[in-house]
Length: 70
Image (cartoon, rainbow, N blue to C red; front, side):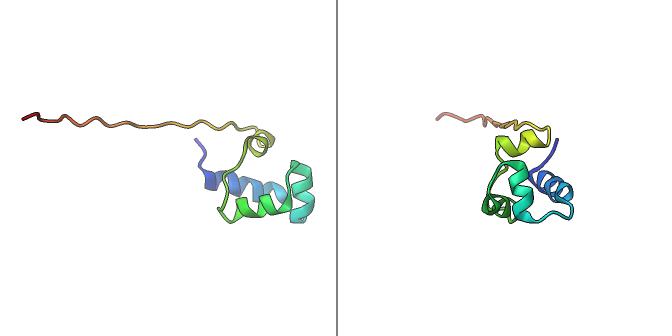
């Protein structure tokens, strides 16, 4: 299971020596979007995840509390 931080680190690693703008063009997104991802201001979208061979899966945990009725 990958966290958002792991995806961002993978993006930075695969960017290598390329400029932010050149790498964003390769991914098919804007440089400002990629910068927002790196700074944690946005979540990685489906297009970015697909480039890395990943898919987004959201899980939710629900806790039920037993209530005493009076």
